[in-house]
Length: 123
Length: 123
DNA sequence: CTAGATGTTCAATGACCGTTGAACTAATGA
DNA sequence: TCATTAGTTCAACGGTCATTGAACATCTAG
Image 1 (spheres, each protein chain N blue to C red):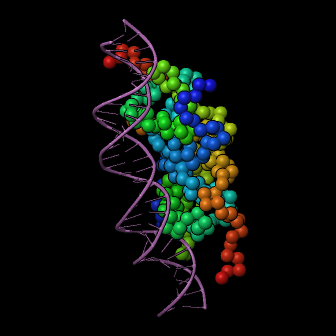
Image 2: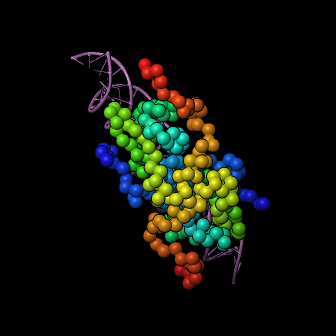
Image 3: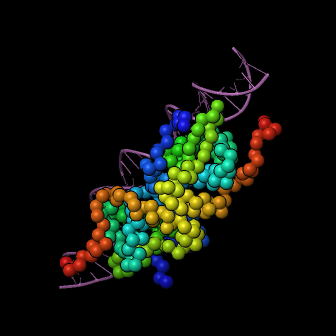
């Protein structure tokens, strides 16, 4: 339960805050990608297609502070996961409808996000 | 079909735009009220509890431009209606989940919005 | 016509947004 | 130890947001 970064408790997640957090093309794309890969927790680096390191850091913080994602430090990385259960408990049906609709959207930067974009062979 | 003010066609309603439009306490309260009184088209004046005339005009324009509401001039008034069908067609389940969640929220200005708040006695 | 009611437009204002680049911290691994 | 990897922090910048007050338009009623 090592919880380094501040996350709002589930009961305090605010609807306007969540709507604002998702009302940005980049962040909406992020949660669409997170939803698609919900099995394997992703890192910030997986989203570099969507913006610079600095911009990503900013967006990740926004999503975390709004209660949309959970961020867990793991070594030098951050593991990102959607707070599906918390959001479903608070706003039933909401996240799923957003994800479904967002999945049909073109990416902001129009690059393909492979599901298999592991460094693979390593360096 | 007299359509004076510019509304985006249903197919062009954008999810980020809708999310941004709803990510404001005042506008979220407006659509919650509109949803509650969906039988009787409301006027801008019905929302004066939520802000000044000028602010309301601004928020109504935002909601209209995002495709969330339809605005029809009627004499000196404007009749506002939620674009339920258009939104449901484009983002299934989305609006309903937002409305349900927003209905459980406290009002921004914390005043009671009577369903029967006619000016009655006037000044 | 004059008054009143209902909204709009405009300029101004302070606040916040999203991005950038440079500098920085922290963990990994040879 | 030293370099690399992964992400953060900071100051700065231009842009947009939400609000205000004053002036304006427009329709309805008498």
